[in-house]
Amino acid sequence: MSKTPESLNNAQNNTKSSLGPAKPITTLPDLFLTAVSLLFLFSSPKPNHTLFRKFLPFPPNARRFPKMTTTCQSRASFATPQALSDWLKPRLSSDSLESWGVKPGTKNLHNLWLELSEGETSLVDSSPPLRTVNVVTVRILGKGNLVLVESRQELSDGSFRDRFRPLSEKMKPHETTEEAVTRAVKEELGSSRVVRIVPGSYRKKLEERNSVSYPGLPARYVLHSVEAWVEGLPEEDFVTEEKEEYEDVDGTRRLEKAVSVRKHYWKWVCSDSLCS
Image (cartoon, rainbow, N blue to C red; front, side, top):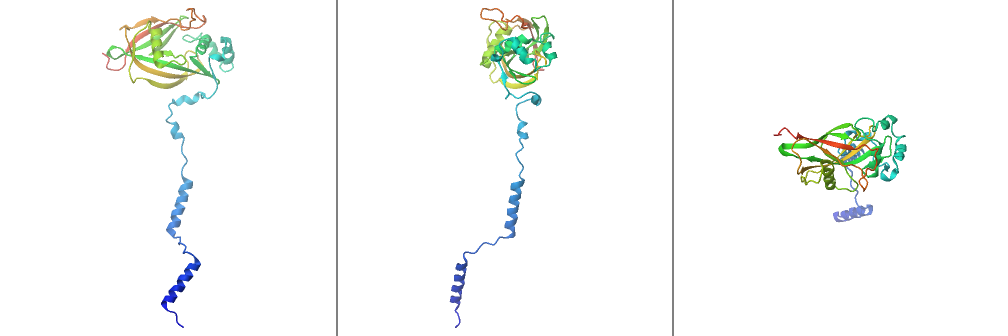
């Protein structure tokens, strides 16, 4: 008995359903795309963190100094100058420590102890230790594009120290930049003067170099700089005498052995080639 075309189609359909749905056939292009994807996944370069380090706001020689993650010695660490000396001796070369207060233009151990006592300085526990100081720098503007700089200082031991830099002063703990500027002008330029900070002139930067005041002791300076107008200053070069930097409440000097600045020598210089 011969089968009709309709019966043949029904038979073929029953055969397909018993075998399940037809599986897709993997072609060569599909295999190629899969291989390329796996190759890209496993060969992708890892992030280069060195690229990010290039943009950190630190000078190129910052690696010469210890990181700030180490223990800091501050005002509460040393009860007396002798305690500070005992702590420094195994961490500094004897030649460096012995030159403090002896080499012209340097300060001595007592000065450093006072800075620590006042909270103006901290020391990182390393060999050699790292002295960290916050400093306010005031670029005082004058007539005809002139800028005031301190050309040199006369110290209490009779020596002189060349400076040629704007008015600078170590900042006190918790002191704002504006407060430090006002105090610096009063202490180093004499009497209370009206100070007007130029809006938008504030800058902050980090400098790391060997300390001039304490040879052999590397220093990290956090500089807070502004430009300002100060009323009542002489238009010619002038000299000011500074009040004692470290005094007790009754006005007596706290430590006679410390070296202090006796006189400041100020000079107006051209800030650019357009000076009149």
